[in-house]
Image 1 (cartoon, one colour):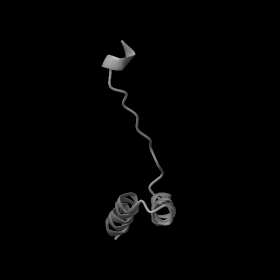
Image 2: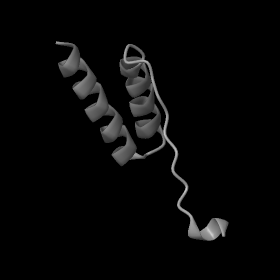
Image 3: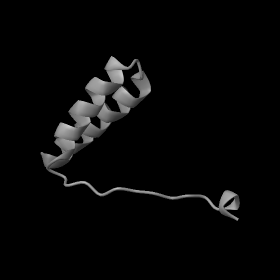
Length: 53
């Protein structure tokens, strides 16, 4: 039965911690040649900065 069910997970993060988390995720993504993950983190960083303005 477990194979038929989709596992759904999510996390909540403190909005003030998101910029630091996004910067770290971007550095790790670039360091491991995971450009897509790095770009996603950078987009998240831009959204958090523009939302704070």
